Amino acid sequence: MEKTVGVVMTKVYVAAENIVSPLGLTAPANFDALLAGESGIRRQPGGFFASAVPGDLLRQPVKAAGLESNTRFEQLLALSIQDALTRTKVPIGDPRTAFILSTTKGNIALLEQGKAGATDASLLLPATAARVAGIVGAAAQPIVVSNACISGLLAILIAQRLIRAGQYDHAVVCGADELTRFVLSGFQSFQAVSDEPCRPFDAARKGVTLGEGAATVILTKDTTLLPAGEAVLLGEGASSNDANHISGPSRTGAELASALTAAMHRSQLEPKDIVFVSAHGAAT
Image 1 (cartoon, rainbow, N blue to C red):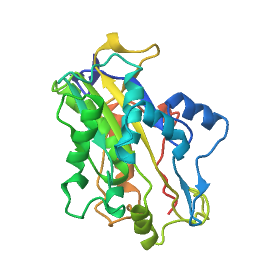
Image 2 (image 1 turned 120 degrees about the vertical axis):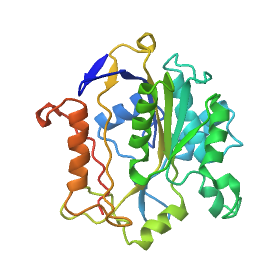
Image 3 (image 1 turned 60 degrees about the horizontal axis):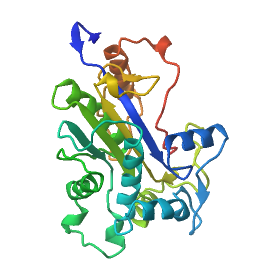
Image 4 (image 1 turned 135 degrees about the vertical axis):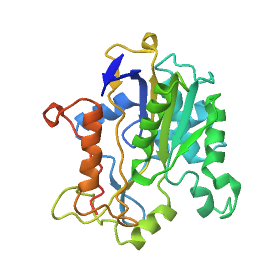
């Protein structure tokens, strides 16, 4: 057990993971591509740059998994979840295994394809989550987390808290978003899309590069279900709300610093202990 601020906390571990992106359909494939210096960003039809999963990469896996009648968004999620499940014995069909879907737009492509109206219930995220849960055999009622750019990380924190609260023993946390004309037009209306691959944190940055993909993290408190080289989620993480602007964070960075400080405190870490930072840089 982990002691944090005088309270005995249940340890929550990462049992398996997956990444579906233009660089591959598994986490190892993506990691190898990154080490080789590969990028998923390409110029797309229409002239803009984006990171889109090639149809050829998905075609055979989708057919093998019997997902041809599902939307592309659902295909991305199902392939990600199914691969992660092959890497662990965590039972997704157990009601004690939470199922959490994180996304910002979900099946929004149905709208531009003319397959759903703006008021169609099939566009609602709970309906989408229920369909994906049915595909992968999840028994627990799906939980949806949709909070813009922090949706994925917030979903992992919620899963950790649910396990620590004793409501679940395990959790399958998945997330995805699809590149669509609808989403592109929204960012273009902000004049936020770069005419070249994005350069986050560069003083000469010109805007965002949109991407798509899916990912899954399977969490558990059961140490007998862990692979070699266990990874544990420390503390409880932290989040903050700038309440600053519809699309822009606070210019002072105070709220971001508050979340970072709280996360380190809850994990009993100091800044000197941090050796890697995974930062969200939109390049806007």
